[in-house]
Each structure stands twice: as structure tokens, then as C-alpha cells.
Length: 580
Image (cartoon, rainbow, N blue to C red):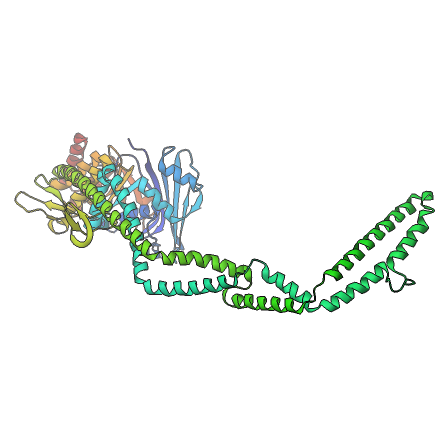
């Protein structure tokens, strides 16, 4: 059952396409047309919708930008819908609208469900929606890393679980190794740093500064340095407030305030406002007596001892020596001491830390070896099933005697991890080098597909791999760009038949030049240019009945009206319908 369907694409000012609409449907859709008509632009357009790289060269000459819009029917709650809604996209009655704009200057913009989104988000959605395959993908299959990824994808949880554990252990081992190398290679620098920190801490410890002490001493030095002036001022102020015993006739503030209060007390009962003022004068009298008392005490307590002043200045000098080196004030000096003590503890623990890290590194290498062995065993088991399934598919693609196998090997490395009694090289994905081998006919030795497969055989191997994936890890839509390259005759018929079977489980869109493949399609689209060399809205049309026979005839013989070609085309269509 197809869970998502690419329903339509509108393409404007892209390559040879001026303005065209590609109407798609569930099942198998074949896109045909003469060479250079713009069939590949269909694949390019879908690539842009799926977050592919934008290229200003794609923009039609004379146009400001190229625009591709797509409409995809998606079921509620699917991963693609959840991710799109998280980005703020809105669905239109179960349909997700996607658009991509590429300017003539190369700038690119993407929209999803009416919202502007990063292009990378479209690429994320592509993993759940569409699998695109073309000539570049065939070349990608030649890379060993892609072959290992294909095997891991087929194996599913059997490989994914130990691979996840392995990846975590590998990441930790890398971190431990880097830290261990840093400690051992920088041992001299770290020892010098430790000596400097130790000297500074000893210097601070000898002084024993106290938080806030510098401020307190500065205030005390200021007071001691002006002790006589302070005492004299306090005495004069006290006399002004409370009177001078040596001058009984003198008038002081306290006496005057007391006189004012007595004058008002006699009449306060006659006016509440005056009574309030009387009370306030009384409060002033109390305050004057308190201040006078404190001034008397201040003068008595004031210490003018020059020895104490010398001691204070000496202490301040010691603190100043620290603040010149370790901070703006004592608080910063103490903070430096705290952080430096922690750093010194770390540096002095290098030997212990080296021992701990070495033990952890050895344990992780041992753990990696065990996980790598588990991973290798899971891959080996999956490789047998995968190879058998692909071999079976190749038999359906006119390669009945071909055999596919995997070579899973490891490389000896004295600095590697131990697996099955051997010390082998390891990496972020394990210890295995995975290579896909093909023996195209009996007696032929298995060889890497890069060397043992022709272009047509490689196309069929790739299709077989995708068909196998469709049964284990399907995506809703498959797009093949000339997967039948280098293929003809019976092999082409078998590819068409296999694509039709794949289309029973998913939406399949194929850009093809082979009539044997196109005949098996449920729906055939023709891409054709107008006289001015462009593809317009009417340039992509659905072929039915006589029109489809004419197109298949052209593909067969290059002659739309050839009776022989027409008969062959009708025969192909009849055979395809019978096979369905």
C-alpha cells in the first residue's frame, strides 16, 4: 500500500522547460520523449524539491529564476508530516505543498506548506518520501562505503543496535586518546605551569589575605593618618552641641533647643499645630544629645598610635604586592588562588590521570573489539541473505546465471583492536571493509562490480538492490533516471516487468528511452518541445490509446507511422497487460 504519493509537479523556467505541469499518479509512470526534450529536467526538478544542490545554470536563459512546485499526498501522523508541522508547515486536506526557487544569481529559497524553511529540511523529508536513482547513483554504488551502508540498511536492527553501541564506544575512545596524548606530549609545559602556580599559591599563603581586608586597612590608615585633626574637629563639634565645661557662659545648641522647647510647652495646649512643633523640637533635643554623646565617645576611642599606623601601612604594602600579580583587589587574588589550587591539583594528578586514562583506553579498545566482532558477524549473516535476494532478483532481470556475493574483510594493523585473535584496523563504522562482488556467468570468478559489471549489468544490479530494499525498508516513491541505460532486448523487458511489480508496493516514476520498459507503465507521460525549442504547459501530456502506440512506435523504430513498429508496440502493450 502506497502511503504517500507525489501527485503533481509544476516546473517553470528550468532548463528547456518554460512552463509545464507533470501529472503523476500511483503505480508505474514512464516519462519518455526524444533526446534533449527535457525528460531529465523531471528528475532535476524533483531533486530540487528534495533539497538538492541549486545551480544558477539550471535557470532558463532570460528568466529571473526557476521555480519548481510539488504536491505530495501524505497520511496524517507520518514522519514527514510530523517533521513538516514542527517547522510550521500546514497541510491542505492531506496534501503537502513544496516549492523551491533558484535565482539566476544562484540564490535558493524553499517553502513547505506555505512557510519558508531551510533547504536542509527538504532533504530530511526526502529520506522518508522518495528514493531517487540515476547514473550518479550507479557510480555511488561503486564506492565501498556506499556498499557497506547498503548492507547495513538491509540488515536493519541486527546491525543498527551493535553499530550504535560501537559508535558510542568509538567516540569515547577518541576523546580518551586525545586527552591522553595531550597530557603526555605536554608534560614539560604542564610541569612548568604547575611550578608557577605553586609559587603563586605559596606567596599568597604567606600573606594570608582576608576578604575585604584591603578596604578595611585603607579606611583605618586614612583615620590614623588624620587622628589629631579628627579629634580636634570632634571636640569642637561636641562643644557646639553640648557646651564647653571651661566656658560656662557659652551658648550651645542643646541649651538653645531646650529653651525653645520650654517656651512652647507653656502654650501648646491652645493649638494642636503648635503642640506638634513642640514635640518635634523635643525630638531634635534628643538627637542632639545622642550625637553629642557619640562625638565624646569617638574622641575618647580615637587611636593616634603611630606604631599602629606603621603596621597598617606595612600590611597594605604586602597586599599590594599580591594585587599587582594576581588581581585588582584582594577578592580577585583569593579567586585566583582558588582556581589555581584546583588547576594545580589537576596538574599534580597527571601521573594518576595518565594511569586512569590508559586503563580506560585499554578497556574501551577491548570493548570495541567485542562490539566489532558482533557487528562483523551480523553483517556476515545479513550479507548472505542480501546477496541471495539480489541474485534472485537478477534472475528476473535477464541475468539468470549471475551471482552476487559480499567480501567482508579486515586489514591487519598493530595499532588496531583485537577481533578473533587478530589485531585489525578500525574506524567509526567498525573493522569491516565491505565489497559487493558479481560473477555474471558460471565459471566467472566473483569480481568487484566496478570491474566485473558492464553499464547495463550495473543498472540491473542497482535495480535489484532497490527491489530488495523495497521489501524490507520501503519508501513511498521511487524515481529512476534511465536505470535501463546500456540495456536492450529481453533484459529491457525484464526490467520493465520488475519495475511494474515494484509499483504494486510503491509509486514508481521512470525516465526511459526503452519502449520495452515504457510498455509496462500504468501511465506514460510524453515530454516534447515546441518549435522554439522549449517545453511549455502543453509539452508534458498523458499518452493514452493511439497516442501511446505512436510514441512506442517512435521509440522502437524512430518512425511513428511504421506499420511494423506499430504492430510491435501493440504487441508490447498487450504482453505487458497480460503480465500484470
